[in-house]
Image: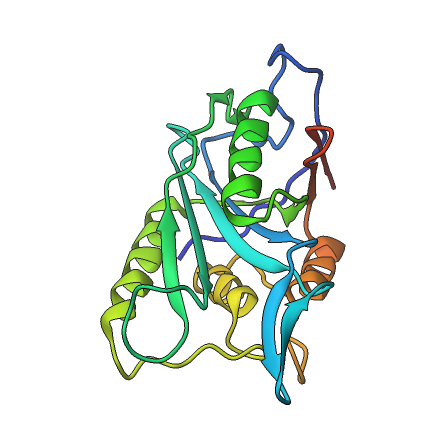
Length: 217
């Protein structure tokens, strides 16, 4: 199983890729980047009411091969297209990143995050954490296996409180032994859970309106 790796220094660097983003360590460890779109409005139907609810957020995960920069993005939610109970996994292509000296260059990462924000995050901001380990192959296999479960008519249904987009991401992180925070007893809310994640792991914050990226320990 991949093991969590301590990041010594994490910071963004000047533009134009003169220097890589300092999500760095020696070796070519992969990147697992859980993300939340904090401004995402969730469609909720409850007590006869239906509407778009703010302040919950939507979660997904970006995995990056530390040698090649190859990426994969996965998420879980109430998407159309499969029979059975609500809740399916989607694995989507996003732009690969550029790796220099074991680090992701700032401009390539911003390009990927911006694509994710538009395609999956209602063109909003992105909050996340940066995890590193020998994890890409295991994460890819895990995501593809979850994708196959979409065909199972007896799969566990989506639940807003304890089987949602954020628990999907936390399950992946747990499977990789990369240190997901403990889950709240009553409800795992993406926006709140990511705050717990950022309290113990290197932060990633991308502002869509200004194309600004900050990564810090």
